[in-house]
Image (tube, rainbow, N blue to C red; front, top):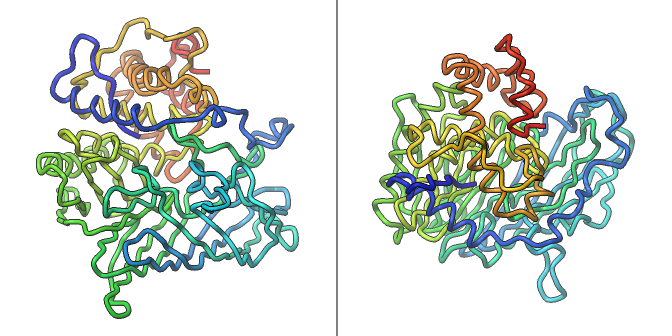
Length: 474
């Protein structure tokens, strides 16, 4: 998600640029009251289970073959996902998240859901639940700890007629959160939280993807992972992608213009933009993309995927992050690229439950963003300026979905300032070591609030309890 609350005393040029992206998102990312309901996810009573219960199904491997229609609006094919049971308990079922149905739910009689699954093998499907964003598949026999199995199904995707992360702008198609992915089961039970358009609901484990996208040759197809193309049928091209240890797979399609450059640190930065994208925005995003991928590699650990795609159109609101691919708007001067690239570490490499702990990726990415810009456009209030008695940095999307203004003020504004305050408490050098060590210790794993608090406390003899309470980190 995009950047940056500006200083109330008047934003600088950088602050204005980043604020434009934020306000654009606020104007377009409508939400419904239904999104704020109690999560249907964790199984009732599951909280009493041992906290150490590992997340499962783990080590997922996705094999996907899809074919597009003439303009990339429809994709259909077959998907297989294999996985292992890491839990001490037998695994009797899995859930497939159909996040692309989040805006439309189960559709209407004249308009089916944008993501449809059929012809399931390897298990018995139930009717989709959680507004058709969760499909339960009962396994034919309980899967013991350490055992591996697979399920497969036909998948049909229809890109919705809206400018969104799963949507379109003119001749360009965005397929973010379109591909079905496994839900996570951990000590809290199955995570079957509702979709939110005002933020993210996503929680996945590091996975391997091998994807084959057959499309008209007139369409360029940027995608997660290392990609290459081969000739397909007459007038068609096949884009192949292999992505290791990523949390999701996204792609786009359209008659993009393209350019590729390699950062000084050796990362290939591939840029794709629509012909009507402002040239200044393209230049700025490309410049920031190259600089940020190396900068954050030094601060958090070297970017492991070798390649990142920047997808740019003028009307996309702010930005949206996926592993190895970010979608960016450039209506003004751009500026969201740095925040979205920071997400390659905070959500991508270091994962988190984005529904229940959104601050662990958004505030961390925004803190990285602010440091990149030397806090240009930020102003941190000494008392935190909490908007209400119930606002807390560690609130979930169930709360933020009914407190839209507070969400951006707290998670994007106060959150990075809290981390800056922690930097003042620990010292700049110690904070830098903490962040890099924390990323290393959770590389391809999952971050939690308790885990970060413990890691921070280990860096100092000072009791940080009062700090957490003051900053509403619960």
